[in-house]
Amino acid sequence: MPTSDPVSDPSSVSADPAPGAPSAHAAPAAAPALRVRTLRLEDEIDLPTHLPRDLTAAWLRHGQGMVGVGTAWTCTTSGPDRFEEASARFRELAAAARIDDEVGTRGSGLIAFGSFSYAATSPRPSTLLVPRAILGVLDNDPFLTLVDVLDEQEDASDAMDRVPAAPADWRDLFPSTPRAERTHVQIDPDHTPDEYQELVRRALGMIEEGRAQKIVLSESSTVHLEQAQPVATLLGRLAESYPTTWVYHLADVIGATPEMLADTEHGRLFSRVLAGSRPVAEGSELAEQDRRAFRSDAKELAEHAFAIDSVTSRLADLTTEITASAEPFVLRLPGLEHLASDVAGELREGVTSLDVAGRLHPSAAVSGTPREAADAAIAELEVRDRGGYASPVGWMDAEGDGQWAIALRMAHLETPTRVRVQSGGGLVAGSDPVLEHAEALAKSRPVLRAIGRPQD
Image 1: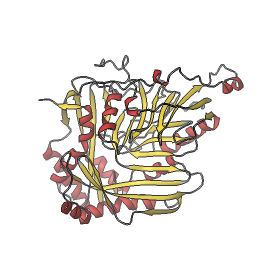
Image 2: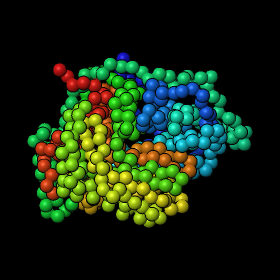
Image 3: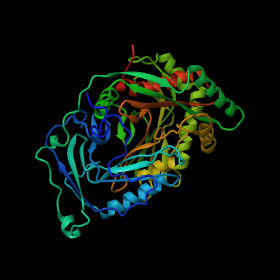
Image 4: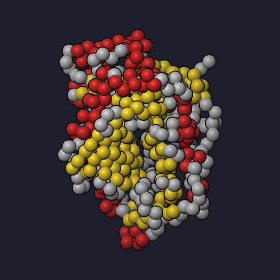
């Protein structure tokens, strides 16, 4: 089992910042010159089985994606301009980089992983990070990206001609995912069931008073681990159990989200909106008559309509065209079924994936409607800052394309033996406090089961 010392075992559950990360209030340093090299690999690689103990970033779906180790560059931002500042600093970095990419697939070349904070006032900084090495498998095309940082003392022209040296075997950088037995855990929710249901009633009272049409309330629980678990092990469990979700890790967040906020490629935009949920028993699904009732439920459809409008209306000036599913479909996941709609659009010239994510955050699916009123209600009702919960997490390449999901089904890694799990649901007129509490608990199951098992 791993040691509980976060210094000697940086991959254990810990919220320590990445090595070399500036403080949230540090003045941005000049962008370093990066030398980036992507090599094609001939091996067949099962990526979830090569999550190294010392990983710094991960993005997985259907057994493919990207995993990073080390830190070549990182920046932290905060405040209302955190998205714009991070985007500008990465664009400056990319403009100065020398990139040799023999693969030319999505995710190869220079990319940065990112995790942003929900609120502009959050004390938790938002982070972009470029790893020293990335192992990727996308469209069954495996590759290795290596990043070298120009030493300030080196001659710039000589250094930029230097090609990062590849290891004798990629497994030297990305060995097998560490194994660990699931540990016992103690779960301490912030509220008792009665207390949380009373918060729901207070939110519904605000809706009845006309302060908002929809409010998304969340609950968090502190989970104490009997033994520390390697982050790589937790990621492997999530990737195995929830392959259709986007499994992610960066800085202090880890999770498996079903909701894609902004996926852009060559000027095209895709977004998947989830709003409206039904808990089901693990390994089961709704009966057909219950699913039909779900799809026609007035409360669920109203919540879903708010979420769709919050996406399409905010993207009007970033797109030349935008369309949404004619009607929601049911997305089935272990333990939950959701009403879902897909949004597609054509981006205007120069718009990046992070521009879109920053514009959409927070959507009605995670805050409410109207946005300002819903966020004011959240700040009044929730006892904790949301940190990285329900905020954009993902990656972006040197061209601005990338994928930004919403950090749901997630946990904050606070210490090697303590994590904070958070989940919630949307409230509209007619919501039932007991059912809403059950939904919040159901959404916490994925990450709780990856971490361990309750005390007997």
